[in-house]
Image 1 (cartoon, rainbow, N blue to C red):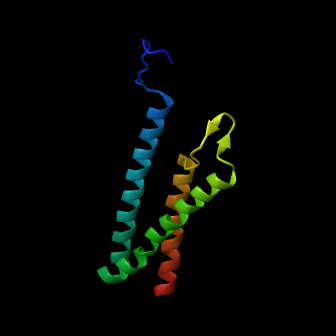
Image 2: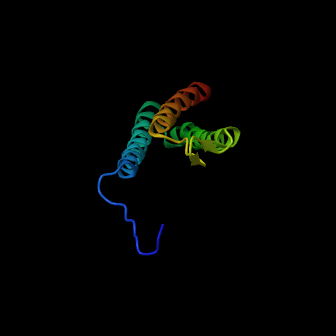
Length: 112
């Protein structure tokens, strides 16, 4: 780009919408974790057992992120004209929230 031309990003572009979606999904994930913990404390009547059950959720995140990194490496790092694409989308975040529920259910069964 020539030196006398400047670009600025603003308004309601696609990236702004993407950031808003990820912010809202992150808040929904946090709210879901709090709700799961409150329900577990109500069911087990123990803060410690509920904490043990909830320990599996960070392990899902540890498993998900290397999976997306590996997916990026296996595709060669290019999609069309875009180098180093990001595969972690809003759909992937919905899957991460669902996986947190599934892992919690499995943990309840194991602890019980």
